[in-house]
Length: 391
Image (cartoon, rainbow, N blue to C red; front, side, top):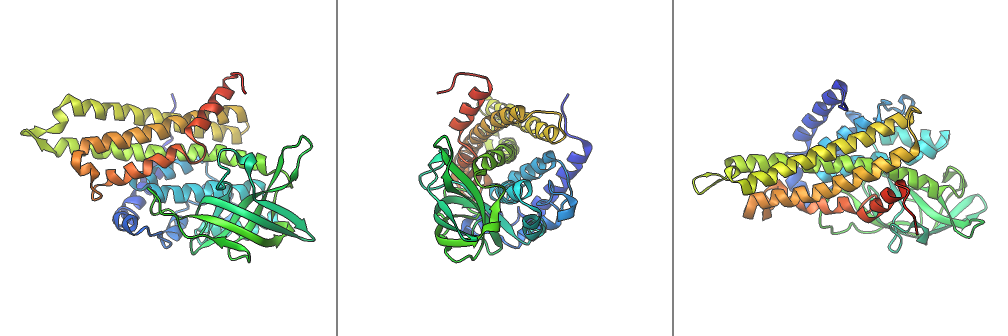
């Protein structure tokens, strides 16, 4: 039988206590103001959250991927924006450098990122290239000992904070022998001439998360800022997204868990027709279904995280992890959207009021079905994993 270890559960309590003390009292105000709490990031770093999967030589704790998912779930249970700040900070910021960077690149960036003194972003999505990464238009050409980058990126998390140190950007650097686009990943430090961070988006949800478009016009960086080998960008971002899907699943579990807890509490205390509304089957059955979704989403998510850890230990295959990650991401995110809708319905008119957290969770839920690969992409990946014919 699968279950988390006592060490994981003890760590869960540590992160939950942190989220309740450092996030919960302020999150409504931050959300109203669309304020990114820069001073919270070093506190998360002090707790070791950014360094969970990072080796000790770079300041991390070399813990397993499951521990990271526990942390993301617990932060997401209080607020999704703070949860995605950690998820993207590690999965999209730290992970590409850790996985594909050389020793000099790791020593230059990782210590500050692990400590929470800095954040990093990952520039993949473009205004006309989302799921179709082959449509990437951003280009980089090698001129002497510099890469010259031109193009634009969209919806990039942690890319414009006061402590953002670098954004890893995917760009076209040529054409492969089969005629396909050759993509490479290049690190662009914040403040580089020709690199412009556009104004923050006015978003439906995730108000506290930092999200910007990026523009590159004759942006020059040293040739040594290439991450890995030229032409490996496509392979690199696929691996990055595989890990990110499990992390987003954990974020979705946190939202669904919060909706379950709040709907249960409200249905136990809200009086209508002289009795708590929870005695009515119309309400209690909805919450019961919600409990089933939470349990199923959590099991799928942590199975995928466990498989990821087993892969790291050499006991599982990449194919197994990719398949489990797609299943977990699809189910958990769609369950989170349903959970937010159910909780809002249980709250009735109050659920439509911003003073109740379920309204914020309702706004935050939808993006989970889109980021790190849409639900449609996950279904495509699952079908491929089953061996079904492909177009």
